[in-house]
Length: 210
Image (cartoon, rainbow, N blue to C red; front, side, top):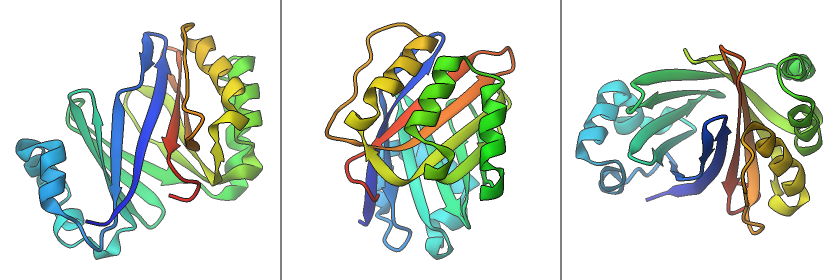
């Protein structure tokens, strides 16, 4: 099995803080289907196979394949040519993450600034300035006015941006939030629902490269 990475996250919405997500990323060159089936369950595996048969059975053209567990829910992600496709079984929702041209990064930040509170925006600028973005994905979902996923060029150690991130997260839902200082921040997700409520996610990995 070619496991590329393990990923955890903290997601904050107005309704609460969610930290039980766990994802495994695999190299398409050596998928171990028995391990995937054990993680997602046979029924979910078959559902994913119906939606993404090429990714599971002829995956060489893909960059990476990831499976996520969020409570009792499961999701599959397939990366190809810089874009990502996903399917969430619990929500019965397919999504596409389009990677944006870097010429648009500053416009994306300017747009985000008009939709979120100043604490979130200043935290975002401090934690992942547009110049630090490797990729900005625009995620199409039926629940959001917008949803962006910002990937670092080089993953950043948690302690260097922990204070700013927690301030932003707590401005959405004011409760105690902690982060493991031994991890790296790989992505930051920022979204606003159609009724104007912000959501923010921080994704963690164990190394600064994968």
